[in-house]
Length: 381
Ligand SMILES: Cc1cc2nc3c(=O)[nH]c(=O)nc-3n(C[C@H](O)[C@H](O)[C@H](O)COP(=O)(O)OP(=O)(O)OC[C@H]3O[C@@H](n4cnc5c(N)ncnc54)[C@H](O)[C@@H]3O)c2cc1C
Image (cartoon, rainbow, N blue to C red; front, side, top):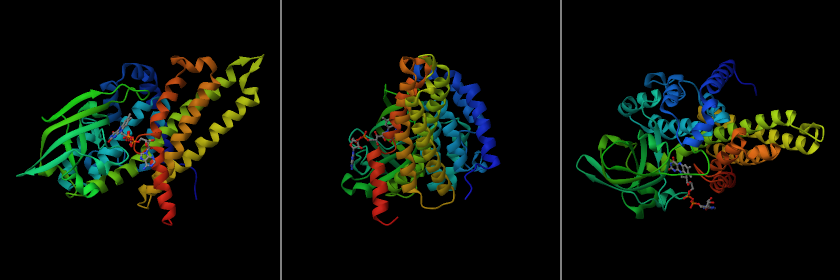
């Protein structure tokens, strides 16, 4: 067993770090305050290969592995969690299902623009009445000749505001529950897709969280992803992979807050000495670090399992559960270590504290992750 990163992974890590320091970190406060990531930055992420990291070169990707993708999301999220989830949702929730379930024609048609960042990907599953229980969704589709026609509402769609390429889930009959779901690839600038609003929220404010109405959206049959009735399987398998991205985002947020706290504790003096000399602060740093290191091992292992086509659903749930709870814990302690300055925008840990919370909610809440893990344990997995 080798716990060290390979030379290739170290190189990737250091080049993403350089990119983040130059292009992302200086904009992180502005992204939070202006509730958007500048188009120029998205274009630079595309040029850097961050938007097609593990897609094959044949479809315009960088053909790296899933661990490289996780490392990239982690590094970006250390400075800006909104940018981290842009990459993660785009890659895991839009590119990945096309790669896994798409026909060759669909891969050639949709993936190159996604890999280049000409289109930003998103995943349209959640509805006002269907969150943790997507089998209960009520967006309805029907077949009309060679088209599918879809009517419904989708809530909370990360990256939705870019109006790029979405993986959309709808049912042909609600009484069929999960067996009724199908997945479709949709160009969100199509007629029939209406933006209801971009939500205002606690954290990851630079990330679009968009609500859509689908008004008789007409899609050609060739936009069906996988087979009819396969939508639930596509959604669940996609989320298994997505959780590695969210774990990497949470890990990055925690590391960003930890690095700042460690540095601050050495320069901030009270009672005549740096606060790092107080055992109360030392214990906080040790506890933060211990949880971060455990999250990192779990996250990297999930990426390795997926890459090597081994069962990884419970592991990705475990890494997301641990890393997200680590992120909320570490960022809370980071604010505390900074005292009053921790509450001030300029010191950035207040943003990280707000950003961390969502990692316990999206792509399955912590309660749902515990269910996934417990079911695997009880099944002998
Ligand atoms: C910023 C943001 C971005 C998002 N991005 C996307 C996206 O890109 N695409 C998308 O499709 N969705 C997205 N979502 C939706 C997100 O995945 C859901 O909000 C999440 O899955 C929870 O669903 P819900 O909000 O309906 O909560 P509910 O399912 O109503 O849950 C409410 C509470 O009940 C608990 N609960 C529910 N069921 C159980 C159970 N069986 N056992 C124990 N506890 C349970 C939950 O854990 C939670 O604490 C996003 C949400 C947000 C806020």
